[in-house]
Length: 197
Image (cartoon, rainbow, N blue to C red; front, side, top):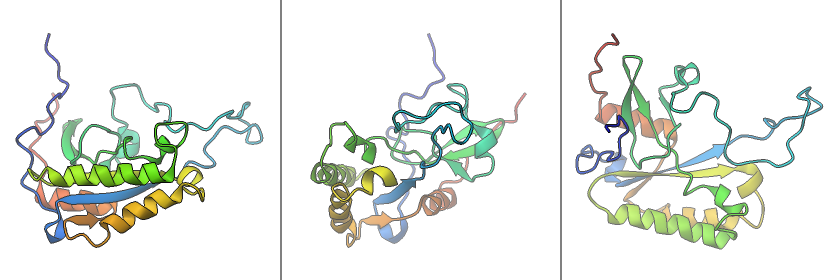
């Protein structure tokens, strides 16, 4: 049985890329705004959310990219599978994917394995250390945040400790996702995509 699914990723063929200033790790903080998106009887939804969840329901059929939403953007983050951006072919054109991570996400603080700010901060520091220790190629690290989770007084300290750990490192580039995508696009141009038939 053959599969079109990529089980290898870049493997040994990662792009020869350095982030600005020669950094080996690009760290970006992703603040997810979800408040107000829950079901509400007052808004005519006919039901209300009993519990807020951290993983949204699929908006499109599984295995299909949401180009209706993505076509307005220069990249999308609907992937959880790599530590570098990559190009995919969608409808005969190259499309940039900047992966997001559920591992380095504050959702782990809600009934998950990391229940204290200290544990979350240590996990982020350990993740960055490992990505930097693998000096084979540039890496990226996304830190997913939600105001209702990380915004709690007992949880924010772990993020502060992590930020203090990376802020003065010359091998870390703290950036916005748009800057990361623009830098990648400028240094790793899209591949030629054959036209759709």
